[in-house]
Image (cartoon, rainbow, N blue to C red; front, side, top):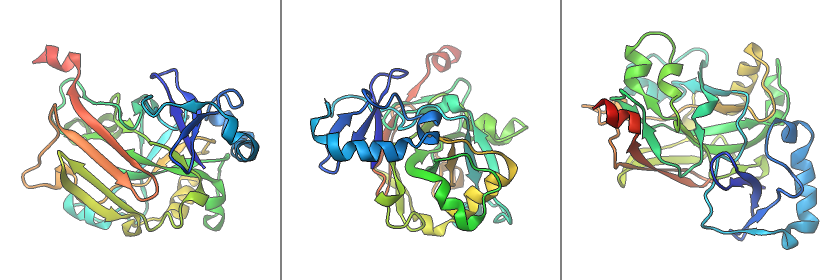
Length: 290
């Protein structure tokens, strides 16, 4: 299944993207794709309902905005330096254990919403990533059972403000959490939709120029390892997101770096998980400070 949410920001309704590309509204039966939905067996119930009711469900116009495919989760856990080539381009040693940081959940937006440059920002960067959505409460999960806790996968752009992240002291979360810094989707794909999440092509372009072109096969720590590892340090709740890291090709690794500017267009995709597009704009607060 491919789960979508559609409508105005903050008023999204749950839907499903069918195999023929059409979209249907399931909000009359399922209130939203949130913690309660995943915790109470919502995926199985939705699959069963679709078998009998998909043809008669209300259709959703292709012109309607897509929101993030899940309602705001309890946490967005990110993994840093999880591709060997990315660690090298940032002049960092490949980690011996996964590097964990957070993005504020208020950074979550739809896949094609604008990327808003925050006030006083100077070095806004892109990162195409595979996001894993947790399907049930996970704590101290063995690696060989980790995939049993995965509800699905989604495309994620882990935007960063490098000066906030690296030059202002403290934790990386400061450079990762601005509003609009976590476009997710266009859909959440259940595991049966992907032949192998450990070998998916991933790419990103800025103004039509390819900046990242890699595969999830180049991750240092794979999805089962990450789910198991993170669950050792915190309880993962249904609907939580783990973003698994980015390959080489970010602005920080360019010589000289070429960070995003208003008017730029970022396009990205992962095999089996669709594509997204964000146009870069200044925030009103940024304009006032200039």
